Length: 134
Image (cartoon, one colour):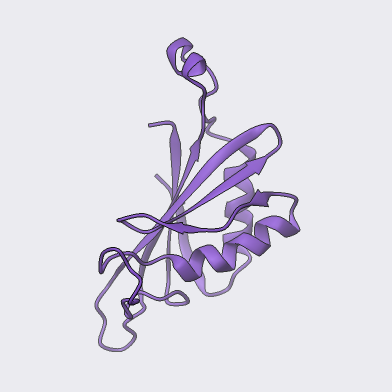
């Protein structure tokens, strides 16, 4: 896969209330996408409306000359103290043309600028902790 994963822990986003519109009961991430989208726009990233997948939510974004898919979902710790405690994952996937794929070109770099920007946004939020890459 041509992607980087950013993982973090937080209780800021919904991991406990399954929406009537969820495709599957595990489709959390709608509020994370809604929170992240304007923060990206403030930094010059064109982020389209979030849409649901069968595992979570996705944002298509354009940054510089690249197009990316930000795939996000979370897993609850099933805490009785705070049911929204859990781990979140944002997969930063860089879109490549068929020609790029065949040639092995256009792969996401370890120091991809969009991934670094998302990390900066996440680090600035006090309710987000234990941010790491996988």
